[in-house]
Image (cartoon, rainbow, N blue to C red):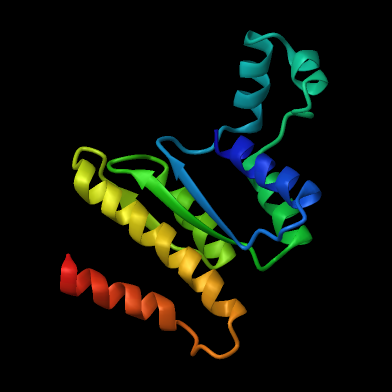
Length: 153
């Protein structure tokens, strides 16, 4: 569930010494509404169970997204929704709201899906490394990586 993924990001922000600057969110469905969260919790052990197991009270993706932005408004969330999916609109909003990118992920073509995820993940890691190196031009490592992809496929 999208709201739980964002809840987890908030927990990591609270108890992680190393700062989070990028998040990758992959989903096959749009976020649950508050009513859906409450109903599903009641169907599966009841609300007290969830609160007592460190999950906390029922929440929505909007609440969790707002908490992320309050704690660190520089966190970029890149989103991937499965093709032909109702999640596209909300995933696009989440990405735009955080300066991220939203892409369709066609899991029927495993090779293309893997390349898409790999490109995004590697680019984000290289960008983070690049930003910590004062002697490198902004975007240098990502540009080198992309040129290698073109050259070597």
